[in-house]
Image 1: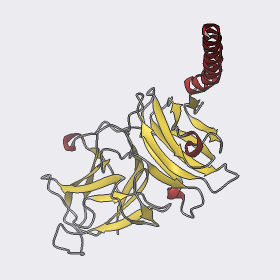
Image 2: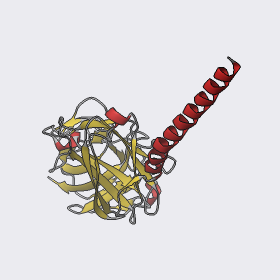
Image 3: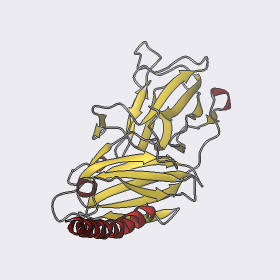
Length: 290
């Protein structure tokens, strides 16, 4: 009887050892795959990462992290397209810092079958030499194409340092993700006439339809001030934008009176900044007499 018990214990130990070896053999490849992070290979220009149906979050229950390090200060535009044989790809993305902590709005929804490009495209301002991650919570196989472009970051981050912007000239700028630094511009209105301002933006977070914002107010904020630092145009102040291809054009009215005959001559300021602490992106700004 004792010999039978001893033999059973030996068999149990052997079986346990076999199971441990099996688990170890399965775990090692998974750990190796986790160590080999997905990556956008180019610091400037286009590069692509594809997540298959088998590797998407829906099946693996794991977030995919795509690492990238810009070789220029500017902005990255990511475009999601379908790579699934099951359904049109959809899911969520989040821009993170080098520690994989979110600096963009958490879980921005994308849908590759949508008609409007802003549903499957996002733009973030980035700084040269910094490491970022794009966290992808994918419901299906998805192809993600990144395009990193250079754009200058203005050092005019206070009203006193405002950069002069002449009529009919265009300023380009970038709002860097995770940084709370505004860009200031100064315009000199020399004629008492109507003034129109045109702005375009490529950003993240804003939920829009055509040229109109729907739902979440996020993106890039444009504010207008007089020479005393008081808010100017009531229509344009506190404006968030992710504009269409032609941007958005509007008239600056004479302070809060609603007068449309033209604004008084003098110096005015335009402040460009992130709308929330998760906003960033690229913008253009110009103005002219009407």
